[in-house]
Image (cartoon, rainbow, N blue to C red; front, side, top):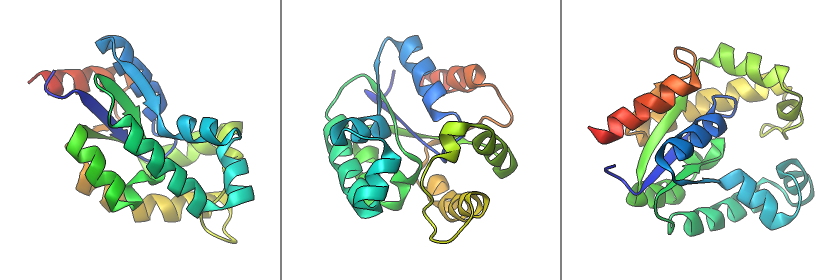
Length: 174
């Protein structure tokens, strides 16, 4: 393996959690999720953190978690979808590992997120927007950021999570 850390970025609903678990298992490495760590640190769901403390506080906690997880070795880090909106987070992640963008077409993201009750409970980022409007606006705004930071892109609209995990392993070994 060419890197001690694999960092997965991408919009929610693209398969980051599934692929990070597959990669960690294939490599015998630890899997860490910045969203899970932030929620654990606060003792509440992300939705509750955002509703009670606001997005700025969630992003501060997320940055704290990133500073900690990059110190780990042989780890797959599953980052929350908004991590790319903080250049300091991305610089730190890039310094400590290889960044892989888990991508999916917007129509697939919409279908996955609206079909999953957990995802319909997520707080919106755009005040006054419907869930669908919020997804579309944030997906489109973040797309160039994911492109900018990624060393590799895999597409879960075109390949299964297993195929994407295998492709990442092959790319890293080359």
